[in-house]
Image (cartoon, rainbow, N blue to C red; front, top):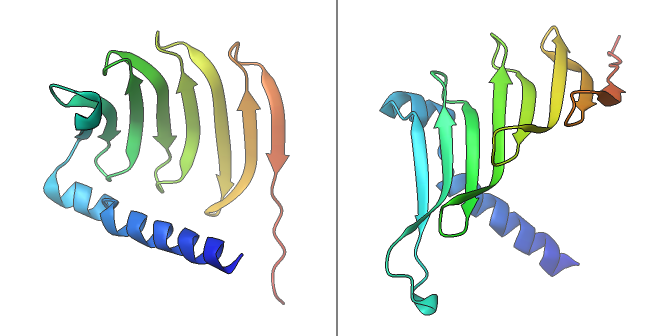
Length: 137
């Protein structure tokens, strides 16, 4: 158990070291980041597109595509929307044709998430979750 905790902490700390922060993305003017993989052990002759991430003016990710089939087929496609306070208000999962698979929306009041709603491929509400907060007196 202790080794699992240590391993998890190492993974999380290395991820935070290599992940680009939104402030760095804004400062450098990055609007898209593409990740290419080349596996020499399987004989890849060239690097293959594996992932694309698109960013808005605040450095928030607004779209992410992961590819398969030598970078030709989208295996995972997500779009994100934010409100004026940079709160994530919508996650949209799309198929390779750009059609909705699922959608999740979030509502906020005074900077706190108050509701999460899930929708299916036909945009029918399937589940909601409400958040309530208690405060110190």
